[in-house]
Length: 395
Image (tube, rainbow, N blue to C red):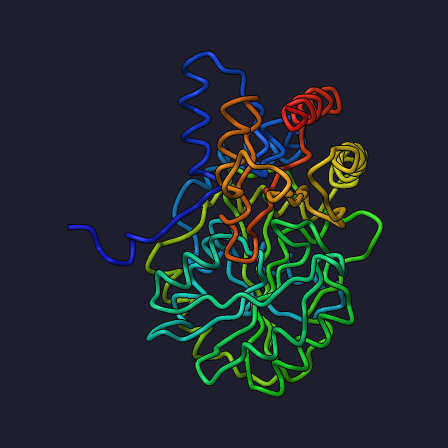
């Protein structure tokens, strides 16, 4: 018998990869634009971080460590957050996780039950939707306005607050749209949270992957509103497979003590995050190098090319990305009679051309009529991909 909580879990980003793998087995060339993993392409983990991991292994740090994370790394994260954003945190405010996904799991597990609601940006990263449902809650999407650079629609957010609302989640830079929420919008969300005594959860995994605009850290705008931040090393430090992230609690009025204790219980129940990866992450923070800056430079060039090509193709349109490595084009389904919806479009595109994107409805109800693609491949491969896409749509 399958548990009810599993029955309705979906993850479009990986689900479409199953179709892609079947096509690959039959000899089809696949262009993977579905998963946001730079290391699949020409981005590599810096040598000094690999050396730090190797050193940790051969130094014997291969045992279980503190469930909250090694003390040195938690202290270094505090220093890093103060240096970047002026946040005043202590090691007691930090908990090391197996990626941001585990951090979301921990927070949602201690916060949500009995059909409580959490406000999430829509379109939305599927994990927010899945975990809210998994723990018996209801994910409520507040609208991101495509006509305003995918910034939050504050009036829509206000309307969706109810007596069952427990928290508001901010995801900036956003997945799947690539938008960076403006400082004004972030302040407005925090003010609303304060009015209704709500917690703010901030997913900041792409905070260092931004282009023309500057990332605005929600916690620096919050005095009496508690903020739970989620971040990690996968993206900026090119260690996706190491699965290493962290939670920070910015709680100046000690409103989160019980929640923090609950999250710590979850951490102890799973023993600890990867021990040797934590020591390598320590080196990455102490000596950040220039790999992130170089990656952002390459990504910006690839984003510019991808956006230009999309704008030249009749039948699709797009808002340019401020950060991360995603674009979220809209399909003119009324103009095309071939596809009944965005999922049908993405699957058909994959089967006909080998271009593996993610259908927009996989990012919630507000993602319909769109599809997500990454601009991680080299310019040479992107040229081939957009030629295929343009020719396919011309048919």
